[in-house]
Structure formats: C-alpha cells, structure tokens
Image 1: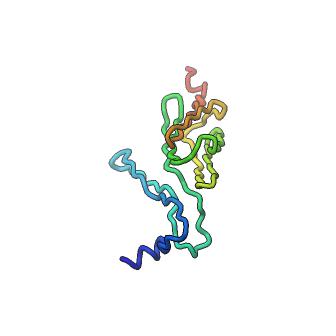
Image 2: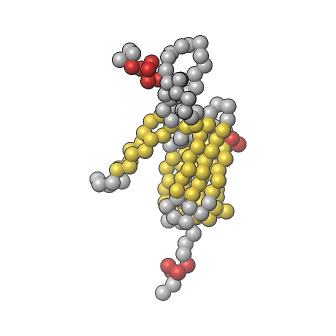
Image 3: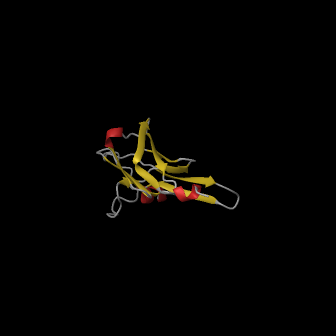
Length: 142
C-alpha cells in the first residue's frame, strides 16, 4: 500500500508546489431501474505522464422544469468574472481559465431553449443558469 499511493498520485516531495486535487463521483437514483453514475474532476496521474490535462470537469446538474431548464454547477474558488458561458438552443458550455485552475463542461440540454433568455447567478462557488424553454405553439392548438 505504501508503494501504491506514490505510484498512483506521484511522489510526495514537499518542495514542489501542489495544486488542489478534486475528483469524485455522483450517483443518482431516478428509479429502481434507472441509476445515473457521473464522474467529476480529472484524476491526477503520475507527473511523468505528459497527456494529463490540468482541466477539471465540474459537477453539474441539469434540471428540466415546467417553463425553464436550470443548470447548477459547482465551481469552488472561482469568481463570477472568470466564468465564460456559451448558450445555444440545445447546449451550454461552461469554461473557466485562471491561474488557480481550469474547468470545462459541455452540456446537452433535454429540450430546445432560448439562449437570449439566459439568467446567470453565482454565489459561494455555485453557478446557476436558467434558460426559458421554447414551447411549440402547435402543441396547444386543437
């Protein structure tokens, strides 16, 4: 065990500066038959592996409500002015690129939305995005 940890996570040389390490998973039980398992963050691998990206993937929930689509993303330590959001009818991209860290997440939305209706709030490392659904007028005609 003492040999496995340094091999997996790199040496514990205290002279080198270390960046925060964030990696985990989230499991959601939508029903007995429908379970969703999601990873977040990027695992830190050995320092000799050159293809490891410093970019992390935030934990994100997409919630379809009656009139809106709500997106909640955890971005600890990130200021609102450092967040870049690109919204389109069927997807949203969240990006952060600072000296402290990088985050990136591309999301497919469950329904068509109006990108011009976007409302963004950020408080205590939690980003909330709301987009109005585009409702097909033909659904309401008889």
